[in-house]
Length: 142
Image 1 (cartoon, rainbow, N blue to C red):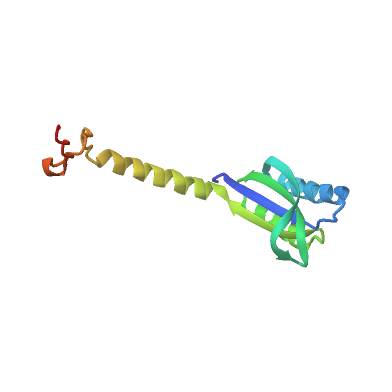
Image 2 (image 1 turned 60 degrees about the horizontal axis):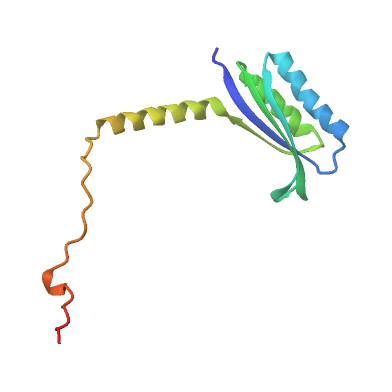
């Protein structure tokens, strides 16, 4: 099976105690270990203002995970668990490996197009030519 890379961001209620937040993170780690996934990165971004109200909250505690797995059902299980937790007000899962593949494909196509384009020789920059009628007249000598 092909290995997949996911970004998971969840937002907890701003008044969530630290120990409850640790339980949510431990739950995610437990599911990953159970299903053969690996959490490559975990970042606690702290309390931040939300772009819009979510369940009557204007702020939330952001937590970021980067997860590598070969089982697609791992992320479904994590989403199911996050959906029923009272501490979590919002979460988002993004599959990165497809976006990375698409970016590599587009970069390769751009390189091929660039290699096909004929190179124009650089033209030297010259001073603009001023017509003689527009040249300033010399003052008559007295």
